[in-house]
Image (cartoon, rainbow, N blue to C red; front, side, top):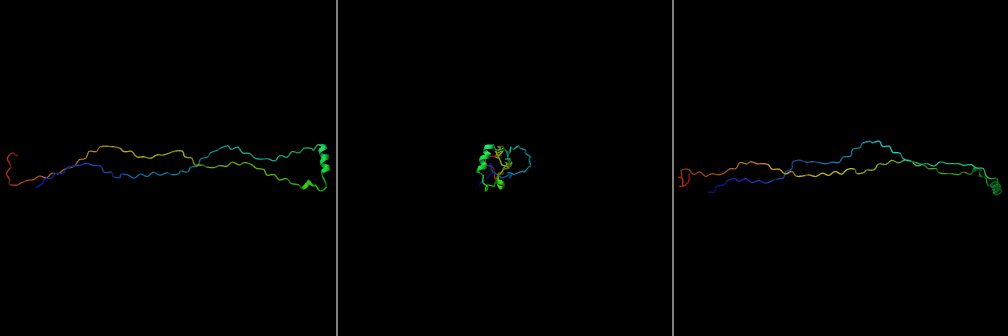
Length: 129
């Protein structure tokens, strides 16, 4: 007959305990920012000067009856600068998520069973009490 007894052993088993989600959300907020922007524009300047006498005589000689400058039109395009506002996304923070292990010792108790052989009506062997 074989007599057996339970023996305890310990090992570790990794089990999931919690699910964690990390999400990035974009929160829009209105921020009023005032910036002075220097702008330029063109203006038309007309300067009227009297023609010197000698130049006037030379021009009068060159002019003919076919030259009628009264309907002549000069077209100039004037321009101006206007401020332009734009928005640009710039990274401002770097977030790192990591886990770390915490080592601990836990005391575990277990009840062990042991088989015992009982013999009825047998005499005890000498030397056994």
